Length: 213
Ligand SMILES: O=C(O)CCC(=O)C(=O)O
Ligand SMILES: [Fe+2]
Image (cartoon, rainbow, N blue to C red):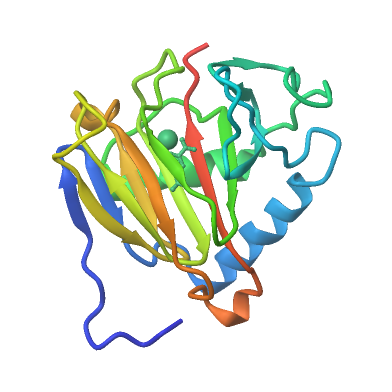
């Protein structure tokens, strides 16, 4: 990890939306990466997501707990190999609850959805809302590998006002409350910026949600 002259501060980006730099230490990042590599294997492994309009998402994805597809949830990979979705391990659900407690100081119901997004140097994610859940529990986002620009906007439109936040390996971002349905996206990944000792080319994002089902 780079030694910073000044540690990056924890920042409230919008009401209920908090960025906590360096939340995962190097060992926890390595453990999470090892787990992601296992989850990415078939069956129900890393896949390219096709949108109803005929496009494809550039970030490839694997789901745990519930399988997300545009735009709903299923117990099997209905838009892929048809296999049952992998279970979400208790330790990962507990990590998400601890994240919310740390970032927002509140309790939450158990987390039952994890999306793992893999970004190569050219991958992006367009502005969207996480709105396929029936729970208003906060969304938890963990980053590994390359630094990205995470764009966090408003609940009304994909356009401004928004705030660009640099998410680095080990950073936590939580959005709940008044920001739970805010538009957000990843306009850019900076290749080669991850911690060399992690050994990941690209960026991984682990997004945890509560389905409310
Ligand atoms: O990669 C990220 O940081 C954001 C991912 C995201 O917004 C999502 O999976 O819904
Ligand atoms: Fe999202």
